[in-house]
Length: 87
Image (tube, rainbow, N blue to C red):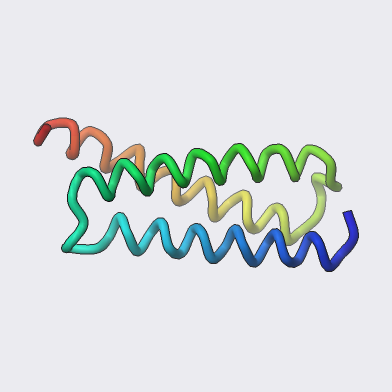
């Protein structure tokens, strides 16, 4: 993968994660919005795993994004039980 393609992918991932977090944190969001955001996050995780499998695992940009994805996943791990208790 060339540098421009990687940078475009990184930007798309960060933009998607920002949107997902905003949707989860929004006071106007309901459970449907939450589960749609979670689905989008899971799809993003798969896309990232697929891309990063073909790239240098020591790449700092990919490592940073991986940590950001991991932290975002922790949000869902903490919120899932709360949402489930209200359904």
